[in-house]
Image (cartoon, rainbow, N blue to C red; front, side):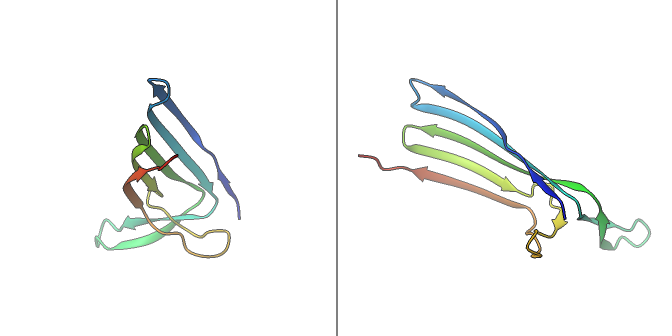
Amino acid sequence: KHFVAAKLGGRLTFWDGELELGAKILPQYVDNIARRKTDPTTYQTYIATVSPGFVLGARLWFRYKDFELFAAGVNLTDNKYELYTGEKALGRQIRFGISWNFRD
């Protein structure tokens, strides 16, 4: 099985690095991928193999000093595929969060 991943991203900093805005896109190429489709005559959904395909992830963040707000998504294209270990990958996942770093 083939699997290729990359990271594309950037960030902007202001006020001597105290404020940061960032974005990261995580495209992945998977050689055997499936998607949920709908039969136009019966309107029943089924899983169809569409090979190869891309899986997209992303992360956005806003950081001020030690406080960070973020949103992250994995498999935003909601494709069905198997990991190289043979396990089935999860569908679309979206997380939001707050992070606070404590420093000396």
